[in-house]
Length: 548
Image (spheres, helix red, strand yellow):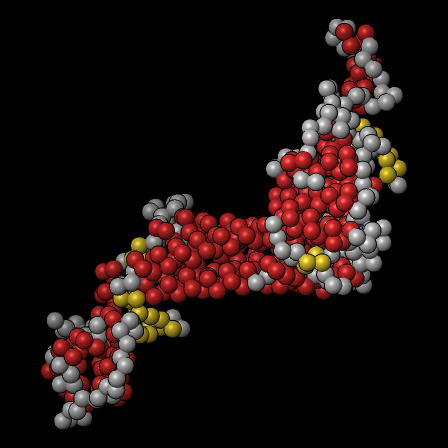
């Protein structure tokens, strides 16, 4: 059965009837202003009319008449007021739950254990939920005891009550279509919940992969823009050899690209499901044909490559794939945070810092210092990375704490990973749109730093030798003379030769030196020649007041 085959079902003409036995409106409702006992009685009757009674193995209780969820959800709302965040904060998880229930309905009809008319109503309800309807009815908290049972029950109740409406019945009239006997047919929380979590993670991961790709492209675009901007490279926060700003940004793009691939590698692992395992993997209450049937339908509905785990008992208790995904997420987050650290360092200042690049100003940076602008976008991405790293610890501890045939802590695993996926997606987007796209190079400052930086002397060592190069570097640092001036004045190389060797292409490695480089002979000791050249040029220590 496909969605195209669905035919409209009768819908109720009016609101659901009042609860059986509830007081009906009488003449007193038309009287004047209420007073005393009459008003109190009317208030009680109105309250009863706004609820319906449902029952479970623990007894009966009232639930809101207009709620699509029922007694199991009501108990969960009372028992788990922990996170104050309903599962609907993860729309992809809600969609995944609907996908699993829709696939189950199709499979149950196929193997002959569910009435086709009930299955049709269940499927229509699931299609609506996949389209965004009733997400607010998925109300149980993301952190809950019971290995996800409350989430599964919440899904069963919402789908059942919407299906009842489509069949022309009122919410809670479960004798016509039952949340467990029909919507949960052939299933257990222990196979539907982890499967739904995996499907939801894949849906959210796809969005993250798209954003990471866009962010990597943004860095690569900046790399092309800055391809000819020479700068000083740094190791251990100390000046090193020259490079281009373009090379630095292309490096950012490549490191993100590597993480895109690592995250993509996890997707097939998430495609191994345990539907048909039911409670512990033995398949109790499920027809032997169900596992393959539901896998086929879920794959068709989701568009994902799915396989049934070869050992359903092992698969029901194993949470290793969630650690794999969480670990890959942490890797990506930490590397992205390092890039943001670099952006903050490179843009530090603007007067007393490195100041090589300028980040787009996004907001005032201080309530006391006028004109101050802070790197708020990289800072927020840093904080997302810290959260992802912490979530990975949570996932690790939860995976370790599983016992025997089931891990009861999958809800906190699902919450931790889904939050990390969502936050990373948002972080990549804001970093790209509100920061990277608007970065500018401070070309004058970069040029000045390269001209006076002694790191470029490294390129001269094949020509003048290490000792002379070291002497040049020391003299340049103590006298503030330029590298080129000292080399030419010492007679070690001609001005033309120095200019060629210290060209941006040579310094940054863009123009490779492929042949042997002869060392230029000098008559005198090179160190002595450098010292004499420095003295003859009149170079002085920058702190010397007599310097011209």
